[in-house]
Image 1: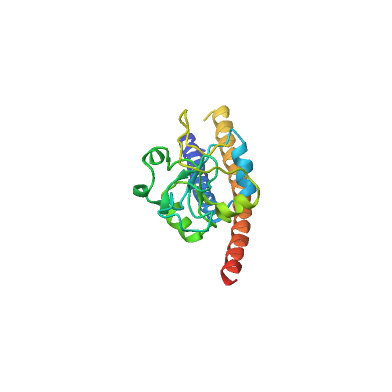
Image 2: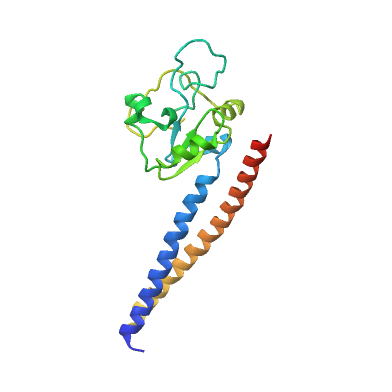
Amino acid sequence: MNPKIERAIYIGLIVVLAGLLVSFGKKEVELQKQIPVTAQELYKKLANPNVNIQIIDVRPYEPEDEDYDDEYLYYTDIHLPGAIPLPDCDESKAPEEAVEQINPYIPTIIVSRDGDPEIFKKCAQKFKIAQNLAGGVVAWDEAGLPTEDGEYEPPKMGGGGGCL
Amino acid sequence: MSMIERVLYWLAIVVLIVGLIGLKSQISDLEKKAQSAQVQLQEGGEE
């Protein structure tokens, strides 16, 4: 066979396979978005220092009045360690120091009060790879996993937050 | 075309095929998980 033709066949085959690999990769990312991560799975991920992940909390940041009895309603009452507040997925409602920490290109876990799929759908569009926390902050707390309260404090030495 | 070049092309093709098979099994696994998550979500919505 003519070497030029043979080379073209090999290169063509490699290009087709690489194209398939890319499309499969995209499909995998899309599927991952549909699968919520459980509190235990997230805890395991966060405990692994090699996993770079950010947690975005979409609940309202702080109460406007003192008269409420749901402890899971506001970020400042209870949140996952290192979670970045982004109320309603709207940067204008988030503290300035929190907005600076948000990175849309790293794997992101969206945390709501109870894992609301609607707010997740809205928020997931802002991130390249996003997953919902099944059961939200309620499930996390009921699983007995560590929580924090109070205002958002950005990490001291860079990073995107989300570490335990 | 030299034998080395031919071997390198085949090596690339084999690596890509192995990657595709791995990714395909991961995708079918994820599809199953996504389906069960969807069912759970529907059951939760009906309650």
